Every structure is written in structure tokens, then in C-alpha cells.
Image 1 (cartoon, rainbow over the protein chains, first blue to last red):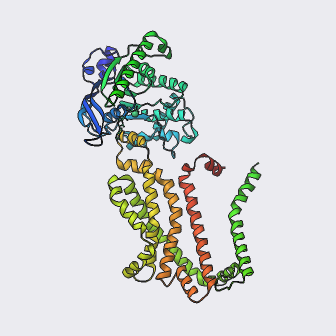
Image 2 (image 1 turned 180 degrees about the vertical axis):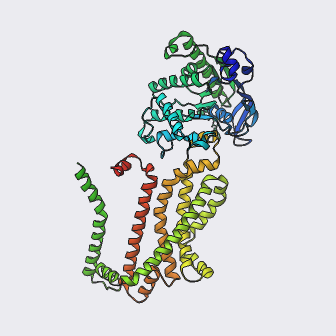
Image 3 (image 1 turned 60 degrees about the vertical axis):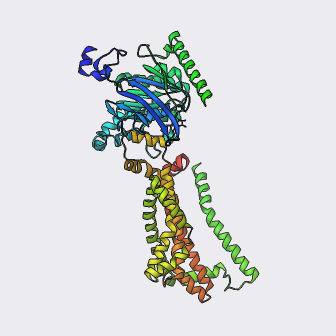
Length: 290
Length: 264
Ligand SMILES: Nc1ncnc2c1ncn2[C@@H]1O[C@H](COP(=O)(O)OP(=O)(O)OP(=O)(O)O)[C@@H](O)[C@H]1O
Ligand SMILES: [Mg+2]
């Protein structure tokens, strides 16, 4: 462990659960008193005074009432929209525009219907450097990489199918591959499992955990499923009803890799329950002010 | 199994032919039964007879009309795609151009022919321009609409990867707009014909439109109808060609059933 830390400080720094090293002291993502108002001065205040740190290689979940600004937080991290006040810092630099290396997946898999599944997975490689300029020359290599990813999510042999030949759950698996193919340092997931059946969801939880343990990207996951947030992440953040503020954060202590069994342990259940109460309060408060 | 499917499809293909034949028969019967004068409404037999016997005379005019239409239509594609891409991908361009375009498309195109004649004199150029201005509008609207159908989430994914506006337009927007584009071509190519013939009837000494003017001035009603028939045939053929191109280049939008049929 210590050897690894000196060789490659960043990904391992938080692996031991936040024991302070030089790298952990400098978070990978930092929100500094960030607010965002949509549609000019009189518009909707979506996020208000958000401050949070995410270490490099960390896995955080964000939960909160519907419409509280979770997706908006993700868009600010990726640089798709600038904050109205405060600033977002990623990798030591304030975000001023699209970061250009972020992997994203949404509830809606949005494949390109004229591409085969594997071409869809490889889409980021046609855009992000250094893959973009070497796309033709190293096509076979990249294709093998995409095939390996597809096999990992249980889509071995489906690469040459067209998107409409796959079920919704299968498309979502492919969409996850598309978010991962260029090995992004930062993975932003906005309810990626929201529309899936329970079995597929559980299976993909395991896949995501394996991928995270193997490659250690920094992950921000937005979810409505509290059990999912506790199972997958190192830290869970709870947001208030709109305008979204960060109410509460909770570190998740369970050892990795976490099997589904951990979900039946009393501490797990208690944690989910605590979060549930927090969100219930946040919602009730939101109703009162609205 | 396959045989019955084939014969079924054959029946479906034959349907329009049968339908046209029925119309012609009804028309012939109507003319004979009512004893209507041939100068007012010639029977289809006379129309086809005139068309066949005067074919060598009509054919160069048909070619002229076809040529004019294709040049005008080609221009309409260029103008339509460029304007459509501009309007569909830029909010500013949309706000600026759309009202103007709507206004322009509401002008009856007969009204602009005299202006083109004033500028370029009687002949092919006004016909080409009329055919262009009458047929580019559906292309603009469809390309712009097609571009606007890109899912915002997909656009977010691509922008977060550092894709420039141009990347998104070329890799996602335009391919996504293809089905809309081809659908508009089918409509536009028939409109382009209308534009050409319109201008030819007003200000030309060649072309099917001109043939019809001369024929009706000389009470050769059968010939005028023959010219109409020829126009309709050319229109159907061009429509067919663009419908074929559509399945060839944007077949993915027609999904499983059709593609499965075509690939067997
Ligand atoms: N483009 C936009 N223009 C104006 N208002 C917006 C826009 N996007 C979001 N909003 C508003 O900002 C608030 C926060 O939206 P956001 O999408 O971040 O919520 P969310 O927490 O992701 O909700 P959900 O859990 O339902 O996905 C909402 O009230 C929404 O109406
Ligand atoms: Mg959301």
C-alpha cells in the first residue's frame, strides 16, 4: 500500500478510507459556495451556497428531493453550465467550460440509432484525444477494448446489433460502457439505474463497483435509491428541497468489495433509514416554504 | 410461405397501376356517355394517342423541363441544407431568419416569376429560379427540425467530452436529420416541377409548360392533357427515386419491420 502511494499517490490516497495524505488534502472536486439561478435575475434558484469536497478516486452519491438541483450540480462539475455565484474547482483548476474528458451516463441511454452497439460504445473515442486522432490507425485495438467492456456488463456478442434490437436494460448497460470507454478520470452518473428492473440494477451495481475498484475514477452518482447510494459510495450527500443546499453528509464504513448481503446488515439498514428521515424532513420543509 | 408473401407483395405493388387504369376507364366511359366535346375534355384514348404520335415533338420539351427542374432542385437542396443547418443549430439564426422565411414562403410564387423575367429575361433562368424558390422551404424546415430532435442528454454527454458544436452537428445532428431531409426531398422534387412549369407557362419558349400554353391556345386539348400526363409520370418517377434513396441512406429510421423485409 505505502509503496503504491509513493509511486502513484492520487488513486490510492483515499482508498484506505480518508486517512490524510498530501494528495487527499487537496480534493479533486471542490464546490465553493456555489449557487445557480436559471433564466436570469428573476429565474429559478436551483442551487444555493453548495460547498463540498470530493477526493480524487472517491465515490460519492447525491440524494435529495426531486427538483432540488442534483442534475444541475453535475452540469456545473462537467462545465456545461457556469455557476451564478461561487466556483467549482476540478483537479486544482476552476471550471470555466466543458472539461473535455468526463464520462457521463443518464437515465435515458440515448444511443445513436444508425450506429451498431459497439460503434455507440466507441463514440467518445471519435471525440476525445488522444483517441480521436488515432481512431482509424488503432481501430482494432479500440474495438477490442469496447468488446471487453461489453462483455463485462453482460453484452458479449451484442456489439454488432443495432440499438433497436436491444432491450432498455441492455441499452443502459451499453450506455455505461460508452461512459467508460475512454477511461475517464471523472464519471458523472445521473440516475443511470433509475429505469431498470431490480435484477438488472443489482447486477449493474456489482459491475460499477468492480469497475470503480479496478480503475478508481472519481464518481459522482445521483440517485433516488438510498440503498443504492449507501451500497456504492464512500460518502452520501443529502440535499435540501429547492433551492438545493447541502444538508448533511454521511461516510459509509462498509468494507469493499460490498456484496448484496451487506444490504441486510443492521448498520446498513439503519443508515438507509437515517438518510430516509433526512430527506423526508427536507421534503416537508420544501413543501412548507413552497 | 415465401411464395405467398411474394405474391402478396406483388398484389400490393400492382394496386396503384390497377387504380390508375380504373380512373382512365371511368374517364373514358364518362366522356362517351355524356358526349362531352373533345375540345373541353378529351377521352384518355385520345390523350394517349396524341402523346404517342407527337412524342418526338414533346420529348425535347420534356427533357428541357426535367433539366430545369433538376438544376432548380439541386439549388434548393444546397440552399435548404445550409439554411436548415444554420437555423437548426443556432438559436440566434433561428430567431433572425425564421420569420423572414415564413413570410417568404407565404408569397405565391407566380408573383415572383415576372420579377425574375425582369432581371434575367424570358427563358431557362427564371424557370430554374422559380423551381428553386418554390421547393427549398420544406428542406429548410425539415433539416432544422431534424437537428432540433437531438436529445439534450446526448448533447450533454458529447459536450462534456469536449465535442465542439461542429462535431455534434456532423456526428449526431446531420445524421439524425437525414430521415427528415429525405422525407422533404420527396415533397420538394414535385414542388420543383410545379415551379418550373409555372415559369414556363408564363415566360418561356421551351419546356412542357410552354407546350401546354401553345396547345391550349390552339385548342389542342388532348395534347395539353398529354403534356400533363407526361409531367405526372416524371413526377412519380422522381418521387420514386428519392423514396428509394431514403430507404438506402436513412433506412435505420424505419426500424425493424421494413429493414427486415428489405434485407431478405
Ligand atoms: N434548463 C433549465 N431552465 C430553467 N430551469 C431549470 C432548468 N433545468 C432545471 N431547472 C430547474 O432547476 C431545478 C433543479 O433542476 P434539476 O434538474 O437540477 O433537479 P434534480 O434534482 O436533478 O431533479 P430530479 O431528481 O427530478 O431529476 C428544478 O426546479 C428545475 O425546474
Ligand atoms: Mg435530475
